[in-house]
Image 1 (tube, helix red, strand yellow):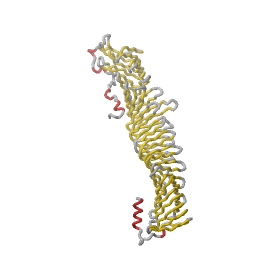
Image 2 (cartoon, helix red, strand yellow):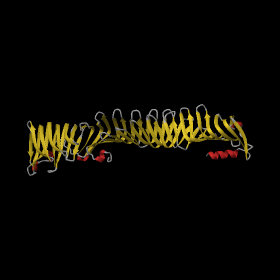
Image 3 (cartoon, helix red, strand yellow):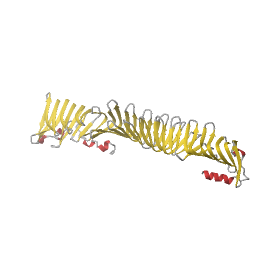
Image 4 (cartoon, helix red, strand yellow):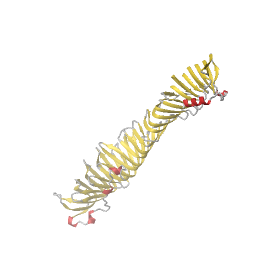
Length: 503
């Protein structure tokens, strides 16, 4: 482009079209001036000269000024001064007066503009439009930042820098590396594209497109981005991060990983407040908590996570349409809380739980107490109903009451059921030869049932029980079920459904 403009200038300048006086480069001072004519071309040889053109001053030890083309070739301590704040210095200068293009090069070529300095080996400066560019490695320094790149442009009017290839921005607060960066030194906003990393004392941000304010440390990313620090990782399709607080908001396939307790939250949109250790996520939201070698999955319309900084334990809360999945039990309810500190899970509002060991539990609220990653006890309160599938007789043992404590042995097998208040039971009696001898229907305020392999092995009552044993041949269909019986095994969540893979 430079040579084409230069050639055009040569073609258009003819003796019949002399340069206007205001277009000519003016000599203000020189120690020595020599007029030359080579092959019919007039030129001036100027030693220690000062030139003036369109308000700018040019300095050099030696300069050759072509009077026909209005071009200056200058050598030794060259300097351009434009306005009150901008200077360019180097070893050599080619200045095309007709286009006002200056090419300055040397071992150390420097452009200084107000509070910032650009250093490289060669600068092409369009003085008419105030745009400087370099195509060799350069470094820009201002009061707060040091920015390096292999190529770059600087608009001296808008104070905007555009950097390409191996871009690195460093200041006291952070380091930013990227492929392409537009930096406005007035607004302090950086706009970047390509693989980008921002590193500060609190963590790292990795993305491919976005913007960052070097003063407020606010940032927003428009493609898949990850924020990573010592406590959590937040990844999303788009992300907004407050660099001072390290709080983040993500949208689109959000994944929040709490590193200390191996908890992972997923959803369509999420928030993280670092100082509070608090996360909120919704839209296809589910959480994975790795307990020993097993994983607990909780799905809800909205999930909340609270970190206890003292011991790195966590409280998880699921609100509305909750599904829960673990290898040894599954459930659903309207809301749930899980505290990793004591391994207690609380289910509220129409909770129901199932197990691969053929039982179902319902109540107004259920609390599951876990020991060594397995259920040790379940506390059912209000309209409690326990159903176990007796695979031997292919029927259902049932217990209901106001409050029920269910105890489990290794393998999540039901071991004991304690009923307190309004107790009712319907269970099948088995003899020593595993033969069904009848259906026991009992009502008693308190009762204690012991189970072995899902069979009622022993039952005891506190108070006066009202019951009867119905022989197998005389059992009526209606007598097989307590009031409120509803075997809902088809509603049991799968892992895929809890993770929104299945609808």
